[in-house]
Length: 404
Image 1 (cartoon, rainbow, N blue to C red):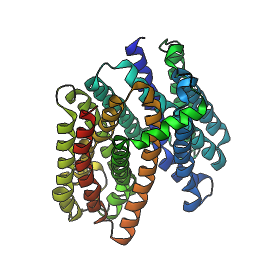
Image 2 (tube, rainbow, N blue to C red):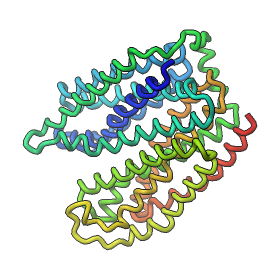
Image 3 (cartoon, helix red, strand yellow):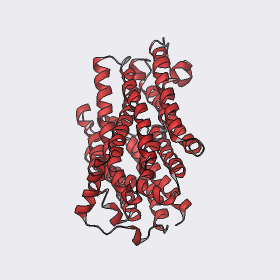
Image 4 (cartoon, rainbow, N blue to C red):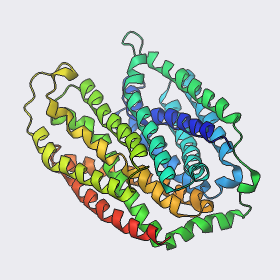
């Protein structure tokens, strides 16, 4: 197995899917402007993206080793390449639905395969932690790039010019497909020969483990925090800091860049420092930012803003919370996966993806409810509750994994 080549393939896969997954807000905006749909109709694109991820991950996670991880990723890349080309030629709200449904299905195949493969190309928990953090860091770089990539193809003179970005995304997917196609890294002997009923039973048996229960609650809480902040930070920037819409969106990219930086740094730090101390430090720092920095941001008197340089420095401070919450998700996943037998990695990854999707959806809804009923200046203070619960869960997980 050529480990470095496999790692590059995983990085490429995650990079292109990060851009596509994070483009849903941009396509929602374009759908209203170009396809004549209202806000409520356009919002359905989020469901077309998230529901296939959860459903497909649950249905195929334990069965995926029998298909083969390489084959599954090739299928995902082929599907998303065709969907991107279809979006360019279709140029309609209907093809946008097809695009995100395809992206959701394909990402489920990619994520379960990548998470399962990490265990086969790493030798110990520290290597597992490092690679998981690096891959998730590349994912966040892709998310940040989406905020700049789509506007780069946009032109006021031609309302359809933004669709050209899908040729680039299809091209990256094809390159990733070709690179992956020529890598030899799977042996048929690694694929278990159990039947489909036993595959599903294996996934449900994981719920009998206290480790699994504590972990899925932890993953759910984290994604609730991350997606809640990411989804509503542009609104916070607009309504609380009173920034123009385009600058509010660009400011939100600071959070994505912070998340990417935090995960890449964690990939280096966890080679030398035990994960429990890294995560404890990170969650405490995130809580301190909410307690001490956020109030100063809320009380900020902002004058006329025409560019990022006009924003006072304190306005950039809250998005830096991403630097500290960034390592939590990949390290939690790595800790639990490396504590389980490799034959259970695919089943556990299915649970990770399902509960991550549920946590992201619920987190965004809860923050949205708080924005409406508690005010946009107060909503983010409530993230202290799941942050506190996460801190407790870290030490429970440490105790449970140390027994294995």
